[in-house]
Structure formats: structure tokens, C-alpha cells
Image (tube, rainbow, N blue to C red; front, side, top):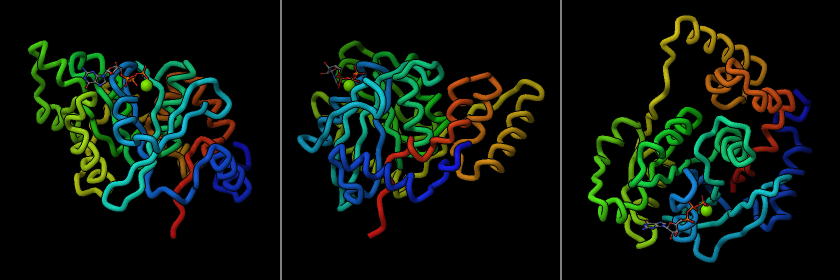
Amino acid sequence: MSNCANSCQSCSASHDEKWKQQGFRIAAFDAVIALAGNPNTGKSTVFNRLTGLRQHTGNWPGKTIARADGAFEFRSTRYRLVDLPGTYSLLSASPDEEVARDFILFGRPDVTVIVADATALERNLNLALQILQITDKAVLALNLMDEALAHGIRVDDRGLSRDLGIPVVPMSARKNDGVATLVATIDAVRTETIACSPIKFHFPVAGLEKAVAELAGELLSLYPSLPQPRWIALRLLQGDSRIREALAAGDFELLSPPRPQSP
Ligand SMILES: Nc1nc2c(ncn2[C@@H]2O[C@H](COP(=O)(O)OP(=O)(O)OP(=O)(O)O)[C@@H](O)[C@H]2O)c(=O)[nH]1
Ligand SMILES: [Mg+2]
């Protein structure tokens, strides 16, 4: 691990500088929200609904992947919204998946909104379950409900919410249906007015649970601020070279968005 893995002054300063250069006032946000989901599920439509003209586009640092950041306000809380690249999984080494995974894992958004296509729920839930392994505060935006209804697809959103352990908001972003409920739900999850208890995988394979727990413990003693050590331990045991490289480089601080400063 490099000696700038933890929050050393110079790293934070250059990190803040980078965001300032991209036009953001670091102290201008109270909370950070990530928008994740499969490609073509309406993430950017939701993003545009929430941020309107208050947005900024560019590339992810060091990559040619487009990035959109924006802002919205709800009950005096200033939110920064980050539109992540659409992905089917977080497990491969494709640059899009890496950006999405690193932001959710190391960027530690206050809430992650998973935008899902209600007409293709099974495929969308694959990614949703992966996201729930690496974050504890999330909302499922069940988008394209208008299409689902037109195709006679009905979704038991309450049952889904119970099973996933996070709130589910049925919506049609294109028609602006459910957007206000989504915002209120994000706020309620952030303030813990709504408690999340996302479903986590358990490993029935003999010995695996023990190995994950042991390695997670070792990792935490080496890197006390490491997010989601169990998930990282599992990826290391599976031989994920990207996670190994991220650990070796110790660049968690650089992967993180600027944290709001206290007034
Ligand atoms: N019918 C319907 N169409 C929608 C809805 N939300 C978005 N769309 C349409 O779905 C298409 C994809 O929307 P985007 O917002 O670009 O989806 P995205 O998830 O940002 O796509 P990628 O960035 O490519 O992953 C567009 O044609 C939208 O107008 C919705 O609620 N209902
Ligand atoms: Mg998009």
C-alpha cells in the first residue's frame, strides 16, 4: 500500500483540486448519490429529471468513459448526483464495470439508486444483487413501469422490497411518474428514516465462509478504513486481479468523491 492510501493532507488537497478544476464547489453538497443500473434502463432520464440544467459532463479521471455529475436540492439538503456507466455486472474487468464498481465501493455514496427495467427484471436483479453486496444504503428505482403495464407485466414491488431489504419505487421517468417519490425515498434512506437491510450472500461451501471472515479480518487490520472488507476478501479469493491491484496501489482516497465539508 502506498503511503497516501489514508486521508493524508496532500492527497485530499490534490483530490479536491481535481474536482474544483471540473467545476465543482467541493463544499456545495451535503450528500452524494450514485445512479447505477443496466444499460438503457433510463438512468440518464432519471438524472435529467432530477438535475435539470444543474449538471456537468466530462470524462472519468484518466478514462475515456463519459461522466455526468449534477445537483438537486430536497428539503434544504444539497445532493450531488453521479450518473454511472450502464453495466450488466460489477465482476468483470471492463472499464465501465470498473468505474461503476470503484465509485460504489470506494466513492462511498450516501445512497446508491439502482435503476432497473421493470420489463426485464430478472436480468436487472443480477446487477442489483451484486450492488447490494457492496453497499448498505440503496433504493431500487423500478423504471419503465409504463412499458411493463403495456405488456401486461405486473411486479410485486412490496414483495421485492421485502426480499431485497431496500425500498422499491415503481416509476416511469420519461413521463415523470414516481420521480418525486424517488427523491423523497432517497432522502429518507439517507437520513435513515427508512432503514435498509440489503440481502447479503452467504456461502454454503464448507470453509469458504471461514476463509472470507479470516481474510476480511486481516484486511481490516491492515487497512482500517477499507469499505466492504468481506466483499473484497471474496474477490481476492476468486483471484480478481483488479481488486488486488487497487489494494496494492492503495488509491482508495483518490477513488473517493470529495466529502462534504462541515459548515
Ligand atoms: N417508456 C419509457 N421509456 C423510458 C423511460 N425512461 C427512459 N426511457 C427511454 O429509454 C431510453 C434509454 O434511456 P436512458 O435514460 O438513455 O437510459 P440509460 O440507462 O441512461 O442508458 P445508458 O446510459 O446507455 O446505459 C430512452 O429512449 C428513454 O427515453 C420510462 O420510464 N418509460
Ligand atoms: Mg445514460
